[in-house]
Image (cartoon, rainbow, N blue to C red):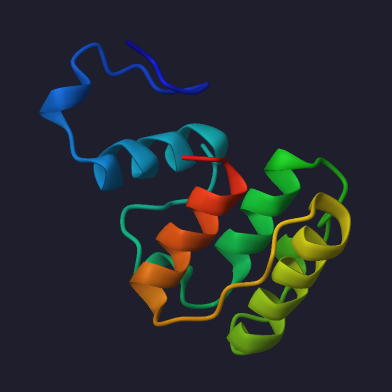
Length: 108
């Protein structure tokens, strides 16, 4: 049974919550290669893409962000999500950070 848009898992017990969340992100960002919660998020652009996908127009320039400025990119995406979507900024190590941020974002 699907839990959220893009969750086409007929047997949710067969996948971990992390796998289901990754599948949802891949559904939301079909043109952005996201295959994990580590390397694919390092430059901050995926976070900008996700914010823009959830609130179109909120982060429209994420594709032009400089990948060698990951802190600036992630900070901009998180500030926009905080200011406009009411999603508090959470800063912890990479993998837990992304999972926590996304869980808060989508009430998972």
